[in-house]
Image 1: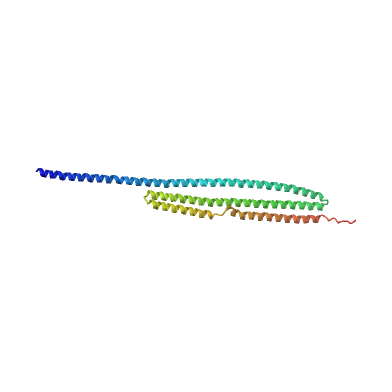
Image 2 (image 1 turned 45 degrees about the horizontal axis):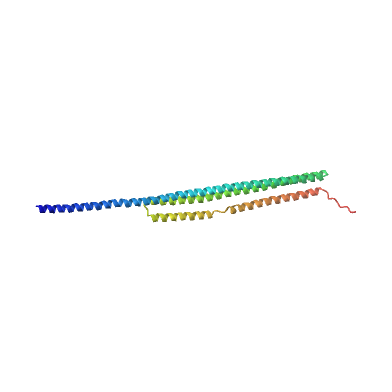
Amino acid sequence: MLKNNFKISAVAGLVLGAALFASSAFAQTTTSTPVLASATIATSNKTCTVYSARASKAAINEANKQAKIDAARALQAVKIGNNRALNDQKLVNTRALADQKRAQALAKLNGKAKTDAEKAAVAAYTATINQAVTTREAAVSAAIVAYRTGVNQALANRHTSVDQATSTYAAAVQAAYAAALSGCQSGTASKTVKATLSAALKAAQAQYKTSYQSIEKFSALIAPLATARKQAISSAMTTFQTSVKTATATLKAAFPVKSKTTK
């Protein structure tokens, strides 16, 4: 009887020991898995945070870049305005001096008219010259206005093209980081996310470079405008000179030629 009890106790002890061993092993297994998962999640969260931070930094960089562009444009506008004001004042001064000299010349010419016919000829000549000057000045002013209007439009168009290229690039960069963040949060392999992000950023940069290089330079945009202004002013001067030449010939015909007397 005692022998049987000993056997039962021994078997029970083995069973209990096996149960405790199994429980210990199970406990070790179940406690080790959450630790690994927690580490993985922590690493994933850290990587996702990096993508988010890079996206924010890229947005700040683009904002700073646009601010510099806006500042440069404002400075350019001031310089253009100052140059135009200076040129306008020079033109006003030049015309005023020309008006003064012309008035003196016409007054002197009028003093030489003795007969009614000569006085009428001088009056007609004066009216013709004054009208020719008015026409010339109007044509020159119109040429200047047309040139400046064209320059303003060319600048506005170029600014629009640059802004479009810049905003498209900024949007592509943000989209690339957004996709990387989404892939990171959804558990996509880190290498895949990085490779996809790198390719997207390179594509955005290449597209921006292509778009920017396709924008015509400002000097090329205003070259035909400068040519048109030069031609318009040249035409106005030619018309003016023709009018003066014709009026002068008519005036000379009204004054008798003095014959030379021989001694």
